[in-house]
Image (tube, rainbow, N blue to C red; front, top):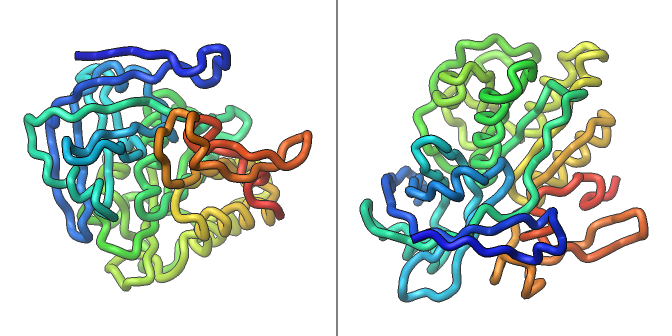
Length: 300
């Protein structure tokens, strides 16, 4: 059963949020209490864009939903995929749901990332559970933005939810031995590197921003002028990415992570202060975001 409902259609940027009863097609566990969840949700798959999320009913014992960033969609097969980590009661319940069960999902919700043709060198930075939107954005670039030249940096302090492999791509600025990459991106022909402080083989031993700086410094000035930064991850990481983008005078979009109740703009429980032309304003991460211009959230 699929139910479509409009949320505040007088404000067209909000769009339409779809409610679907979605069959679980895949629910795979990884080290670090991480899970990949794939569900049959054809209407959400058709509408979703990178940076948006879904609000998921984890189980009958918990009325409140949980927001999960969308990692991948297949518009033809009609599935939507999420990567999540068990943090609390809700995700614990969700982790126990089995394949062929049905869960209720609302989505897609929020403002997505926007790609600009004048900045074809997209630098994608994902940290921890902020990795999924970067994978989705990389997939869209692969499918629809063939003139773009993306570079993806992923960071994690727990094991990555995939087996890293040596990259086939030579990337200027990479320190010796930093060759670990996500197999899926390699298969898509998109260069990427991994960063961690945990000493994982092939990973950069440091922060994602340090690796991003090494890449930026290796670019010629005209190339650097074509870079736009996209990031999702913990608040301190996003603040560091915003400062880096400001230092290099690069446009930067960030997807904020925030606790949510309704996720449709009604409760105002996820507000953040954002700088606007009229001065500071409180914006809801769920519907006014989660993607914001970095300089409006993190002042230089």
